[in-house]
Image (cartoon, rainbow, N blue to C red; front, side, top):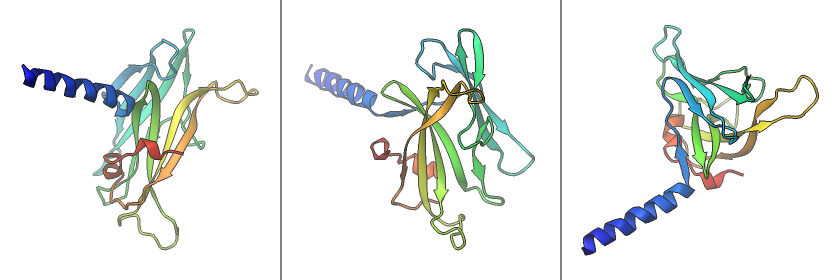
Length: 180
């Protein structure tokens, strides 16, 4: 009986404290219905592989918001198109740019990781380097004409103190409380 009580307490604490932390959201290949902007209506994330006949195809993600039956595409920040994409160096399996969807206390964030080069001329991205994380959440715009209705709003960044060969290694040690 004591063992059952102990197990119940441990599981309860794990559930309570785990719910407060970051949770990586696993996406299926193809369509994923997730309420990105917390309006009670499922939005659409399309996860797909871009294969250009190289040894390392890219994982991509496009996001669409459903508002009142109308669909709006979310552009990637920094005028980088409409599709998120990871990136590997040619001839290397090391990923230098990557992204993950996380649910943090009920809010969805897309987190981008990039190998950080402090000196563009001398740093070799095939070597271990610091990783810069940028966290984005969906926001609605009421700006002047020409601005998208929905966009990814930057909501924090941090750079790791440790060097990594691959951004996936850094994602495995992501520290949500470091975002500023």
